[in-house]
Length: 387
Image (cartoon, rainbow, N blue to C red; front, top):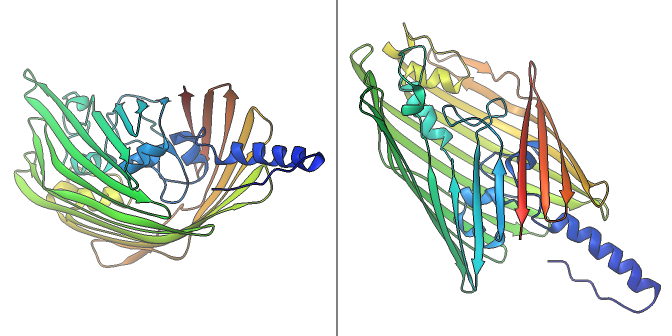
């Protein structure tokens, strides 16, 4: 927290202007998928940038983002939420004394979708069934947090849909737990259920987890997380079963540095490792290779990727009603994947330019972002209302 001592006269006026400028930068009014996309961060939150989407990493962050309603423009949750396929969702969060409660509608786990897609449960090319029946749908996540010297938070997510005519069904359940105090935080997110059946292929998820924490030192935030997800794919298309497993580890440091009273520089570098075992459809999906139903679902596969992504972003309060932001993202030095044949390949297309802006109308902010890749430009729109 920044403390400013105000004095009389012109000096006081200058300090008031400075405080107002810093308040614009420090306030969580900018909080959305669009903002995170523009700054080169994960849509589910950031481990070093203050944003209301952080509640999906550490539920204790709900104490810092309350008395608001959020809206995320997009489509129905039949596919993973990416820059090219934004997913619609929204939430409401309210404080009451030392407590905060809220609900998020329409949320979905991209990890859950990855497992199901790699098991042929959501792939439209393999069945004429309605893919929405096998993807996480109509998800509801309830949050509760409080501050008793240590900030704490918890959430419960549930999604369940079925269609008797198609004999398809899916169900998901997750719990998030988190704490934070001063310059440190810790979280543990547990996957309790991740099952899907489209009457041709099935996926049954085992217990999975994501654990991690952060530590702030001056302008720097050191962070680390580890994820493990497992399950079994019963691919009726070929009459075989495969164990599926993904582990993901990332450690790094991010820095927020004020360039002046209107602009902040965001920089991050991390080491990331992702490994997977299962049928080749899973590993090829991770590698960005189009899945071939005639071969991939009948073959074993392995995937091992290591990268050193670097992100450089800027957020600038151009006027009292307009904030601009942009970022550059690329893997450097470490950037390779080892696929099924044991050969290493360089990860392609890791360079991206992101840009975005926020329009402020009183208590309402509308955020937009665009990502420029090697072939396509993808946009996203979000809105936040504070009360």
